[in-house]
Length: 255
Image (cartoon, rainbow, N blue to C red; front, side):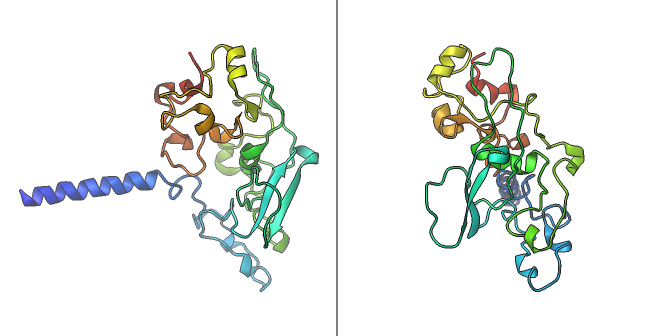
């Protein structure tokens, strides 16, 4: 009997360990430490001169997106009008808006936003964290263009458009994708008639809070309203929660 209990306990511990691993960025599609993927893990192709080897950050999960010291502080505008404020040591100035210690080169593309049937919201160019997601997922910027690697002689041109036959490449034409970077407030919910009031507590959100508090960024829908880049939920497609039975969709859409 004691042996059986030990076996069952071991199985439970193993199961918990595997579940925990699945619910973090390690082992997810955003685990950039895979040494066999030279698109972002630059160790195999980095120039060997003394001026460049110091920038080798292969084997790290976080480095392609984040840098602890040399980073972009804010991203504003879009297309040719995009501006960035970079911080190189010292204390940053201004208010952090949408670039959490951001390391990756941002896209300067101009997008075709969603203009769907009977759309009540006003959708413009992507902003906020959606702009950060698109720095890889619009297919216009090389995946390895992070930190200062491009200026140090590393010139890989592999983009999301060629990874897995472009399966995760959104492109710059967003007319066939869920709209992002639009304000979702009670006024929009009333005008639409088929959206929940984002300021009211709902059982469909992760902690029974409000849509605005849990899923929106500055009262706007962004890529991160549906997707968690750090895979905390462990749901398929890095969603913020499982969409089984359209559960995620029905968090906002009152159908």
